Length: 132
Image 1 (cartoon, one colour):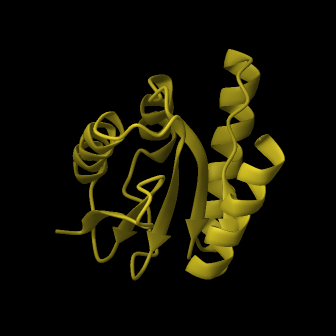
Image 2 (image 1 turned 120 degrees about the vertical axis):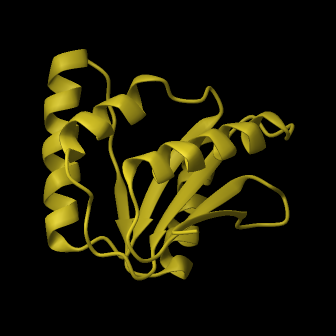
C-alpha cells in the first residue's frame, strides 16, 4: 500500500501519512477516510497530521483540482498539517493551490514544511503551545 496511516504519538493526537512509491489520488482519498475514522475514534479536540513523503517525489496528475476537493470538507478536529520530504515542485504546487484557494474561498489554508519527522513533531508541539 503506497499510503500507510499510523498514530505518530501514544496520546493519539498526531496522525502520520507515510507515502512511498507511486500513489494515486484514490489512494489519498481512501487514506483520508481512514484518518477521519481514526479522528472520530479519539477524545482529542485537535488532531494534527504529518504527511511524510518517504520515497514518493511526484504528485499524480490533476493536483490542483484534487487538492481543492481534499480541502473542501476538513474534519472538525483537524489541526496543523506538516509535510516532510516535499520537493521543490510539490512545494510550488501546494503554494499555488493555497494562494488560489484562500483567495477564492476567503479561508486560510496553509501547509507547513519540515526537513525531518523530528522537526515536524517540534513544529506541532510549538504550535500547540502557541494555540493554548
